Image 1 (cartoon, rainbow, N blue to C red):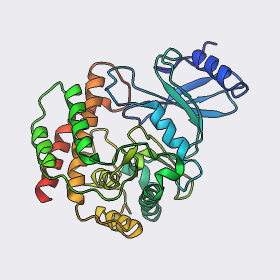
Image 2: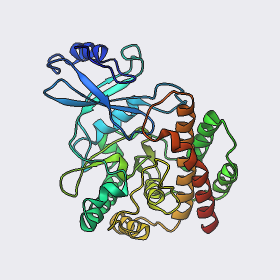
Image 3: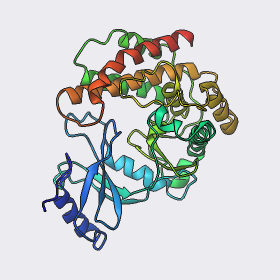
Length: 340
């Protein structure tokens, strides 16, 4: 019986490469499938019938400059092994696009559940839901407490001018994916540029930190933090602001964007910010700007996904509705900047 290749992954070529680079790792024919939920890079679960692994590769087309850096993601996951931040074990990085048509890496499969909706969390009950979301904050504090130099990541980014570069980067990403009118997005960019705050001491930042990008074990603990493609050294409040943005009332719940804010027991955004501030000791008084920037960044990311989907260059559940979320995020960002 022929093995069916999932979109973007030739299992025979992958097996051949693994046999050459990690002899004895695979024992049997590989099968695999796309893991639902990814919004940018493609993620696959593969197995030889005995063991399981995960493969990550860029989307099928329209890869933006500086985005989808497999080596960068592989490096930070490898560096964080052994720290208090839970990450999968890494297996192999392949930077030869000829093997499966793109650069990719392989990591260990970690048991756990990614909670993507309020309905999924509802089954846990209010007490466990609260514990899971607070654990998300505690794990972020642990990440921001890691000394980059001690784990070999001293040169992982350029913290000086981080916020200015981030704003410039996402503006360029928007230009590369812009195919329709987006009222207000240029105004939001200009407001952000005119009011850049002073960053605290730099840390390792995840870049897309949210409940959807972690796995929760059978209890209430996080078993793995995933999707490190936007990680770097920079301003830790950008990570906290993303959690606030994903948990806020501005995020549309009916467009396929992950949000768990309506789950019974979910802490308020004020509670999440207070817990982070208490446990990290950081000043969060300027967080309003960061939340405005988080909405701008999310709008650009989703617009890129909308563009690729409209061109038939990526696959994923609910991608047909992603585009409708972008104007709502822009409006939310403008409202946050007005309050800030």
